[in-house]
Length: 301
Image (cartoon, rainbow, N blue to C red; front, side, top):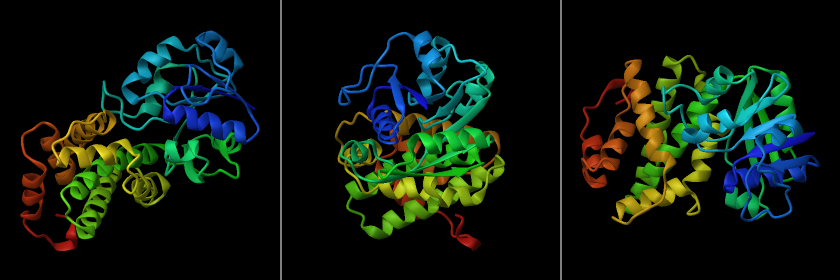
C-alpha cells in the first residue's frame, strides 16, 4: 500500500515509522527532523498522485489550509490524525475533510500512542474509526505491526471527541500533579473529566462506550503518566507558574466549551480549565471552586 503523511511533527514521524514497519511505501509531505530515511516531497500534487491512503497529521487549526493545498480526489481515503475540533465551526474535523474535498471516504485515528515512545521503539495501540469498513481495514493494514495494534470503530465522532478531551484532561492532571495534590485528585480529574466527555458525546449522538476505550481512557492514561506528553508537561508548568509551549489543549478546551454551550451541556472541569488558561483564576482557586460545588445525586456534579 502507498501511504502519504501530511505533518512532519512527532505525530507524523511516528506514523511514518509505523507504516514502514508494517511493510508499506511511505511518502511524507514535509521534511521530518528525526526520520531521515522516509522519502519527502514538497509537491502536494505529487503526494496526492502517490497516495492510496492519506494520513492527515497536521494540527486541527491547520487542517483547512492543508486541504486547500492538497488535491485530494474520490480515489483517496483520508484519515484525520490530529486531535481537536474544527476551529471555524466547532464541528468535526472529519466532516471538514468530507465537506471541502472529494475524498468522501474519511476516518479518524486516535489512541494511546505517544510519538516519543513510538520513535523509541515502544509498543502502542490505536483505534481507527470510520463509517467505511474499507477505511478501517486500510488503516489497520497500514499501521498494524509488532510495534502497534490497531483496532476499529464505526463511531468516528465519538473517537474525535474522546481524543480531544483526553488532551485537555492530560493538561488538568498535569496541573494537579504540579500542585502535589496526590492520586485522589488524579482519579477525580480522570473520572469527572470522562463523565463530562460522555455527557457531551451523548448529546452529540456518539456512543458512551467510546470514551472508556482507547481514544478516551486509554489515551488519557498514557498521556497523563508521561512527562514527554506536551499537555501533561504544560499542566505541571502552569501549576508552577512556568512558561510552556503546548498549543493544542488550550485551543481544544475552548472549542469543547463552545460546543457544549451550543447543546446545553455543562462542563465544569473543562470550563474551569479555560478560566485558568485565560488567567481568570489560579489552578488552586479553580480546584477549590470545583470541590465546593453542591453535591448531587448520581455523582455528576
